Length: 277
Length: 96
Image (cartoon, rainbow over all chains, first blue to last red):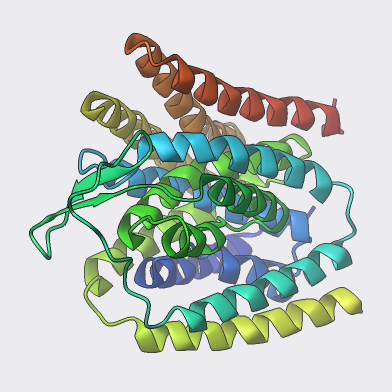
């Protein structure tokens, strides 16, 4: 286990604040930046880094979702159904993480970071799915009021098996790599399952609390979740995402996304190289 | 449905505030080398991990109240998966 010093805790707090505000600005979790920093720069073992990141995912999910309840933006029924798949995937990923060598997991992280960079770049122009206001939302669909347009958005869920498969993979990747998994679920739910981007993002953010908990509990049991470092990261991310949401909500995020994709490609390369050494 | 959202909102908010306070106080105590720091840090982490579990349990209770058995069953599966990870954690726990 790493030696916990006040300096290390302060660095992790600062990095947490940076990745939390970046995450809030980009509408993603900061785990994809936090894990490589903890693992490669601070030299924490990969499972320790993943566990710290997962605790920040839980805190972000809980506080963001608490603030959104009552607006019907979170599709609770769909979320609970897809959680069956994400939690199952996460449980499997958490068990697998205990059996894989660090080099294997680093290579997997490199591949996933590259995929996330690719998804980010291909979705720069994507705004929303076209909606027919007259449709019946059905059992799993939803209806919410959109402040900008002043109208009510109604949608049906299409291709549920695909949503379940994507959720299972997202859950698996989440507990293995210590990221939320929203970057995998949200594009699938939006592009192929008919769910408007905001509802998909809110529902995903709601779900990842359960997903990350399933993974984090296993790391806690193995002693790989170091409470003092997790505390520093959680407090940093809370502060950072609060600041990010307060000051950056209306800034155009396009150049930020391009920057993020560029950083992710570097992260992907460095992680993969670290895994092959 | 609205009631469930409200209940979940309260559960999540209480969990986040309680865990953040114990983590913050725990970190400060750890900096000062004060006693009780490790205990508070563990309480904070466990509270954080318990928050989504409590939210799932609250959902099961609410769906049961609405006699929505399909969603009682689905949400119960999620709870079983969460408990499965607790079981896996106990199996892997090298300190036992």
